[in-house]
Length: 117
Image 1 (tube, rainbow, N blue to C red):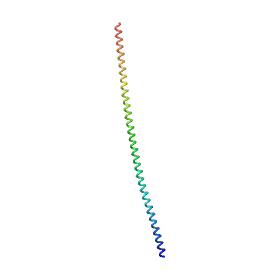
Image 2 (image 1 turned 90 degrees about the horizontal axis):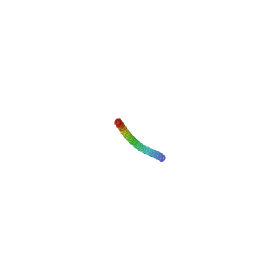
Image 3 (image 1 turned 180 degrees about the horizontal axis):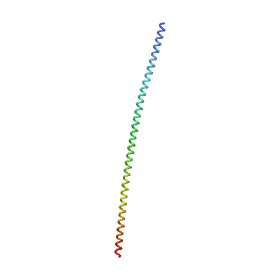
Image 4 (image 1 turned 180 degrees about the vertical axis):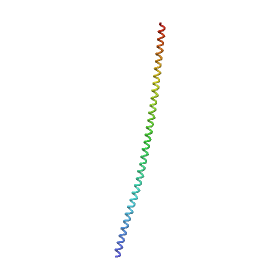
């Protein structure tokens, strides 16, 4: 009978040891899974931060590009306006010169007619 009890005790001890080993194995797996998830979350966060930073840099570069484009367009427009003003002034001066030349020609013609009389 004692032998039977010892075998039962050994069986119970073996069962308890197996259960404890399985529990330890599960605990280890859970811990490893938790650590893996934590590493993945950190990596994902780093990637997201990197993406946001890259997008911000791209947006800033695009903003600077648009600003430079507007500046160049404004300078071009100002140049065109200045050239138009110079052209208008030149045309006005030419018309004035032609008007004065016409007046002189008329005066010359009038003097010539006066001489002939």
